Length: 279
Length: 340
Image (cartoon, rainbow over all chains, first blue to last red; front, side, top):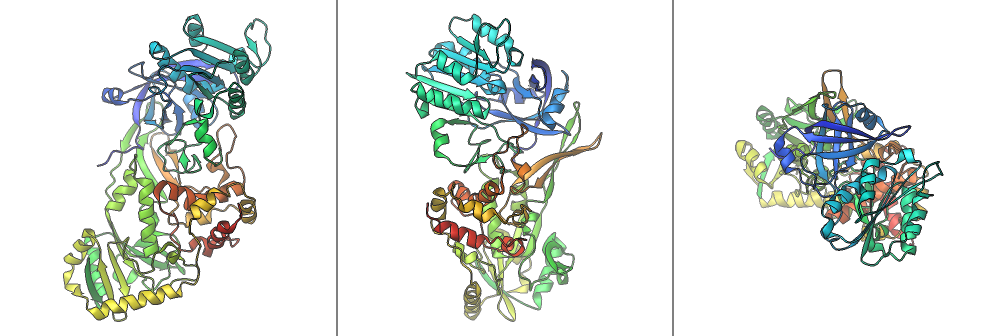
């Protein structure tokens, strides 16, 4: 019988980390496949995604937020928003989820070797970027200068706080955090992410900019990158859509003739400019 | 290809023989509605019909289908199901048979859909030519014919006292060889009779959709106000999509009690706003205009780009049953005439 791409593998929730609390909480789930053979064969590249399900509640498509350089598990970061993500937030370590994937295309980790990388993330949009950041930090010698620009509404809404703190300690990575509104004790940038980008002012020379966040943020980040001289094939983003199958069959995640689940989620700005369709 | 004939007297005997060895589906009339259903006797099949209200696609891409069963919850487990259904679809129209070949494109590729493809492999299509196409039939707009044997394993054409039988595949040959006593070799006069009937049937198709370079033309008018105009009358009922033999979009839902559950796939429709609604509340296709346009583009632009074939077979169901008379022949033909 042919392989069944709809049938998930079972995985154990090894660890749950609360990234952000409050109204729209974010948790990172560390998942380990129950079958060791799957762990060994599940090979992915930053940018790729997985369908994670809780049996009885349904499935959702998430960017894998860990890097393949970290072996033996995968992580997904989930904002509590709908039916499935709310149920996932109720899980405890030791619980079982279904996982299938990896799906979609990926960041061009080999093509970008030797280039300066500028990450521009906002909110939960950091999840796919985190995978690539971990990857390039683990293979630091392969890449040029690394700038990470990240912003959230308040200091409490910053995801991956401990990891940012670790990255800030490194001399070979520049972290530029921001919050939208002024707070006591915050000595870093206050304002929106696109403005912080203009302040950091990365050079487009031999550089790639990768951005992910709310659509409105992406829009202005791209405008500002163009102001800084980045060309449309130096700008990359990763998109999301409502999805059911993850494998280009169920129909709903298309932008024009491309399916975000299968042909994306990573697109260059050049590609996005040349496809029409609702997004 | 084997060319045979079967007499009208022998056809019911042949069908009964088929039923003995196979699960046979055929058009059945019920309350003036024709639908494909399983038959236990040859006389249950209605062979002088225009077409079924639902496409027989429903026998391969089921309206609801269990993907697997599970024990629900955070300590759950999965119980796979066997996909081993075998069947014969008797009396499928050439257009609907073509739709299955079009759907093969979507369900194969990098990720093979085992439900669709296994059932497809395990199904024998015995087609029936349309001698009298309907008023909204337009298969000829896609260079196809109401008597095309291209997409079936066996095609029957009513040529008067007998049926002209074209056996196009090994699956078809297995069937006719297993019931060889009912079949005789066709004579040249039989072949001529089929050609004449096919020609007459083609002449009866009065409507034409202009599909020349349609994908390229649509490329230029995505933002045109035309899409607002054609979708103004749409009520978003989704009938067109549920009746369409090439529509394949589906939803996946978990259905469960406290101890048992199943992941189910069900037909979905791009006419529903919920179809694309994000959990955040954002909807990339918020208006009817977006959704009607997506339906037309999926068939006449996206599908040709991805698979080199228009995803419409000209069965006319969406025209016959649209409650507000949106006519895909007119929509596409006029779209092709819109100035970019």
